[in-house]
Amino acid sequence: MTVWRVPLADVEVTDDDLAAVVEVYRSGWLSMGPRTEAFEQDLSAYTGARHAIAVSSGTAALHLLLAAAGIGPGDEVVVPAMTFVATVNAVAYTGARPVFADVAGVQRPWLSAAAVEAALSPRTAAILTMAYGGHPGETDALRTLAQGRGLMLLEDAAHAIGARSGGRHLGRFGVGGAFSFFSNKNLAVGEGGALITDDDGLAERARSLRSHGMTTLTWDRHRGHAADYDVVRLGYNYRIDEPRAALASRRLARLDAENARRAGHDARYRAALTGLPGVTPTCAPPTGDGEVPAHHLFTVVLDSGGDVSLVRAQLARQGVQTSVHYPAAHRFSVYSENAPELPVTESYAARTLTLPMFSGLTHAQSDLVIECLAGALQTA
Ligand SMILES: *Cc1c(COP(=O)(O)O)cnc(C)c1O
Picture (cartoon, rainbow, N blue to C red):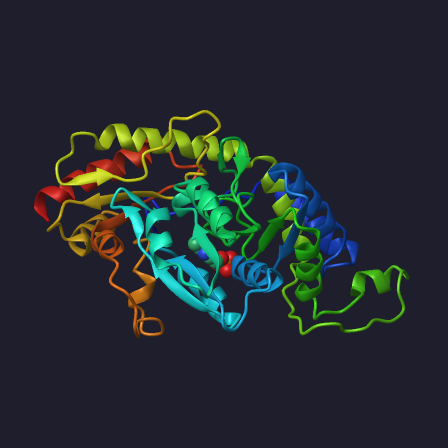
């Protein structure tokens, strides 16, 4: 196993976090219960959403969001191809057809409202956008478009916990949003996710679908609050467990501080990259009031003709881990049949490179990243 001098992502777990998790294991109740309810209340208060529903992964949150919103066979859902494949898969799980639309620009790799408008058809039921890198992008324009056309706006906010635009938390611009708590995300618990919504009916359906469509939970029966149950719809097991919910509450309490440190690293990278030939940082942070990106990723694009694999290999040799977010989803075999040409997405996918970004990144580490990148660009 490579020991990176600078890993792509890292997660800090404190002794107090460990104590909280150990306490759960000692309590004798491990599956979904009071800690999950407490975390949902914390997340609801933090985001301002009426309902927060914690689940086993970000993918489960996306699937539940779409299913509870009533998306199904015969529907089309417009999605970006510049995303993790789970965004697209979640649409396909429901039987609806994902329709790919292009991103706004090579320095603005989020869904373009104009491209979405061009991709609408009489079968379009929803737009599922993704806040790339934790940036609001064109979310507000998509909200206006969806409202004007009577469509649902749904948000894959996996990168965007803690991100706000105009003071509003991402995931609250349309019908609902989904977060991921996977190990490399801003609020990491290992595996986990949550969806938020202001819609009471959607929340009720999502809670029911999370646990087999059953009318009572094991926790209710354990507490003696219910003796039997009915099954009222075809549901899933998308429950989170108590140790992860306890860790999630602790992490949420320090999320703003950690995201602020990410913002500092972003600014430092940007300053160091200015004037470096061959490379341009993407996702310039917005300057407006109430615009707070989550800085999940720090991505750059190489000039046309630059060799991303060569640069990445050279950085790896020096102990700097990088990644590519993302290979374009519409070019994967499972989705490539009849896929449209998406010139901006394809150009971005060919030229992008993700540098290490996590709250505990040190100045020495980010200096090393820049120094190695500058060296790699000279020789690549
Ligand atoms: C991580 C991620 C997901 C999936 O989340 P999991 O918790 O890994 O299931 C979905 N969409 C995007 C954009 C992601 O980055």
